[in-house]
Length: 223
Image 1 (cartoon, rainbow, N blue to C red):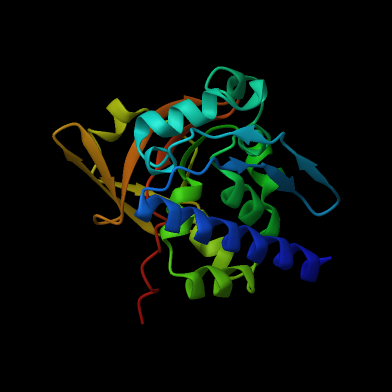
Image 2: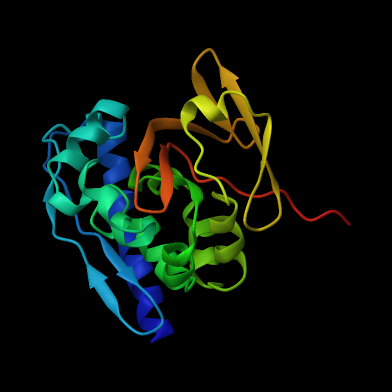
């Protein structure tokens, strides 16, 4: 089971590498994404959704919103409000690799059952920009490195809006690490400049989700 999941993750990485190449080249090929959520007992998939025809535009805010709104109803900005966060993300066409990673780490039930969360969600473009060796290493260690990286993107006990974040300087994440927050004239930067919020304030049944442009890596433990 674990081997097949890792294979799916690597396959997703390969697809995203092609997407990153298309984005950097400004190609005009159509792209599509399929959302898949896995827990320890089962997998549930979202429907494939057509992405904007100009692949160079899908990584910016307007392109991401257009891709989300053209996908399954359950994965639109309005549709995601009905489901808990992991389930809602599984129908979102720009979060397919994040959904795979959450399933690999066995965090679906944990995220869905939490009362309140703030989630900084790396898009598929964010994962495509990640060093492939880093993603491979994380997928190969789902209960260790992968869980630590994902936990650095989740703040428990609060649903923080972009306006709330503008008043913060750091947040306590699920994995115990501190996440730096900086308001740069209305643009929220996270993790000491590691990522920027691209699409803020997406609501699910138990979380406020902010789409970000890079995958953040937690600081190394002291000592």
